[in-house]
Image 1 (cartoon, rainbow, N blue to C red):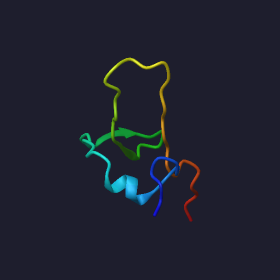
Image 2 (image 1 turned 90 degrees about the horizontal axis):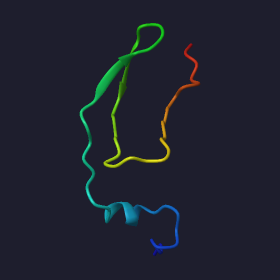
Image 3 (image 1 turned 180 degrees about the vertical axis):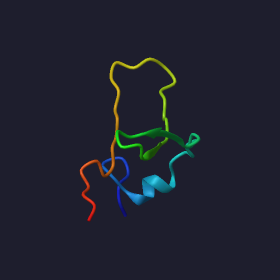
Length: 62
């Protein structure tokens, strides 16, 4: 069994995590007009830093 207090990632800890509200999907146009979807997970209070995650930003299409 994985110790969820010492392991950096475990499915057990995910199963015991509190539910998270998923915001409504929004869209913005890219430089070529393609519609890009995103979910705005905004902080409830002011932070000193922000994190932006981009998946597939360097992907090439055939």
